[in-house]
Length: 201
Image 1 (tube, rainbow, N blue to C red):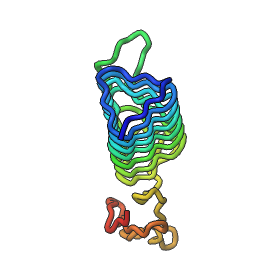
Image 2: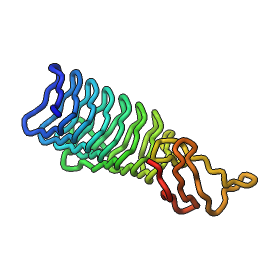
Image 3: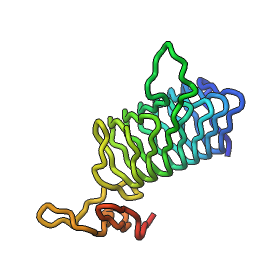
Image 4: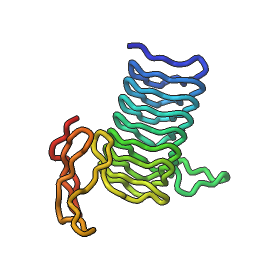
């Protein structure tokens, strides 16, 4: 499969783009960046320099992914979500040597207009609610939203919010199994751990 790059977009020399990837209007891919196969890069997206994007990622309109940010496979970045790479920026002080790494693991979703503060890791298949501000690491399958973002529960690999039915008189049981009502996947949950037992997809 070939790569599609809209004529209005600009790709610097030294960029690697996997087959099947599409880059739409008014986007700029800076030098040293690597984009995997079958990705969709929306309108007015900036990537780089030296950014790594995995396979099958979808980056919606008006997203900038700066140096220090890495997306693993199957990551979804909603419209106008924001990444940073410096904790205490000043226009009059050069801090490129202080860039902090941000890692978004496989299958994670970042909602529209969410802000991901640098130095954080978003776990695999996590779901970040629209407009959230992420200042701390997010666990695998974690459902996080708010400002600042807080862990509000867990989601299935398919993205469905998992409802804990192991509740008696308002108290969460010490351990329970969570079943996805959409795909039937089963997860183990207690106060310390969350992990898949049988994922259907």
